[in-house]
Image (cartoon, rainbow, N blue to C red; front, side, top):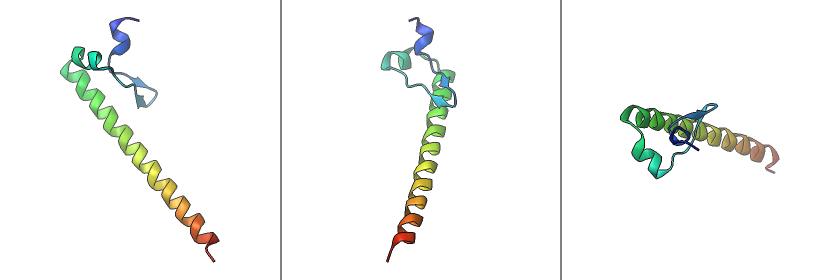
Length: 65
């Protein structure tokens, strides 16, 4: 495994998590891109949580007597 394996990168549309050593080696641009990817991933997860809660609420309402 070379140093480039630890650099900020995306796997599909999701960020690959960096080790503390990789964070130290990364440049400002790489860290900014990594942070932006993480923020986007958090937003994607939040949207999925909302979607699942809404679906759960609809199912609960359907079966509520």
